[in-house]
Structures are given as structure tokens and as C-alpha cells.
Length: 328
Image (cartoon, rainbow, N blue to C red; front, side, top):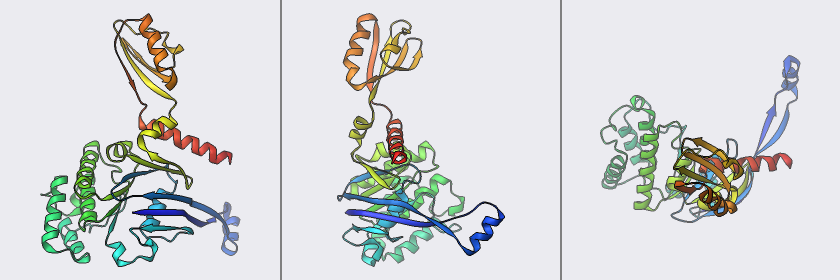
């Protein structure tokens, strides 16, 4: 579905000098520096996959999505999306994908969303019966059947995002590119959009590439993760394996029959010590030894071993990549 090989995007950015004299000099001779937003990344995405595309702010995620959707030209490398070169912008290509950007609107602000949906029906030449069936399916999945005749400007942020998602899916795209689709939404709205995307994927098998800073989106939707930082690809693999690769510890949760002992620090980093409850970060290879020692010395009512939160692991990935970039 997507093939990227050495994809690169470089921007030439003007450097502004400080002070009035610097500003005057800039009128006659500007200084520029090169910024590599994307630096030779390569990956493949197969039909039907739901892939998370992660990275810190400025990593190059949105730039990559814009190149894959044909909005901007690359500085180097190659890409094939749905069998087309995206920046050639063939009509047949543009009819088969959708790009949803959480901070951009495609609906008319002062009109009901239903009017924008009708305009999109005409643009994509969707047969009326197919249009009605798809619209009914999507409004039902998102629970907004009664809101389509309300002006978009009168909707809440979560309701507007649901309408944007419906607009993107009306023409039944084979590829869905999502750039921060739940940004700024509350937990309820996030959960509703996650459920819609999950159910829609199960019904239609649409290939999805998702960027998000909310790890709940990633955990709820994606089995595979691509991570980039400073334009470089630093990880491409299963979501489960990224925790094993970048986290050296697990979280041991203990409930003692009496108050938790205060000597648990010798086993690892104590992150919680409250009454009979304790939580300790323990090295992955030390779990069995630590549990045996604790159970031998203390009366334990309950115990569990958990992986660290995905947010913590991804943060560690970014920190390691940033340290490596700075060193280079």
C-alpha cells in the first residue's frame, strides 16, 4: 500500500539577525541554513495494516504524511502509494485516500455538515444510494445522526472532529492518513473516535497510518509502530516489542498483609509506598529473584508484575534518539 525509499525533505530557512543593523543587512544579503525535516526514511506498509507513526514535535511526521499524500514534493528519495507516485497527483490516486489533520478543517464553518457532505458527494461522484448507506453507517458509528443539520461553528470540538472524520471516509478510501485526529479532545470523545476507527477498519479493512501524541490511541488501534526523530527512522516493528527493547524494568505491585516494609529500595526504584501498598521498578532479569526474596521475608496478600506505561517507554525512545543526535 505504501513504499517509501530514502524519502527526504529539506527546507532552506532564512536566518534573522538580531538588532536594527542586522535587520537592515538582511534586506540586502540574507543568510540561510538547511533544515532536514525528513532524512532518508524507508518503510513499507501492507494493505489492511494499522500503523502508528510516532515522534516528538519537529520529528518530521506531518512532513512525511504531506509527501505521501502529494501535498508537497520531496527533496530526494522515492515513494509509491496505492501504486502511484503521490506528488504527481493523479485523479485516480486522490480518489483512493483521505488525509485528516486534527488542526485543519475541511468543512464549511457556517454551513451544516450535511451540506459539506453533499458537496463531497458531488466532488467524488459517489452514487446517491452508496452515499446514503455510508453516511448512515458513519453517523451511527459516531452517534451524531442528529447533529448533521447543525452549523459546524455551533458544534463542540469533539463533534466537529467526528464530522471531519465522516467527511474523510465518505468516498470509502482504501488508505487513511490521520495526523493527530484526537488532539484537544476529552477522554470520552477520544474513546468514541477510537471505537469508530476500530469498527470501520474491521468492516472495510482500510489501511491506516496514524500519528498521535496520545498513547491511548496507539494502544487501542495499532499493532505496529514506526518511530522517527530528527527526520531519521529509529524503530519499525511490533508495538509489544518496543516495550521490551527500550524498557529495562518492569513494575512490581505488592500488597502486604501489614504496612509495606521500608527496605524495598534495595530491590529497585520504589515509586509508591502507601500503607500496605508498594510499587517497585525492578530490572527485567531480576523479577524472579526479587519476588522470591520478598515472599520469603514478608507476608504478601497480592502481587502483580506489569510492563511500564507506553508513554514512559516512548519518552525513553525519544530521549535516547535525541542524545544520539546531539552526540553526532
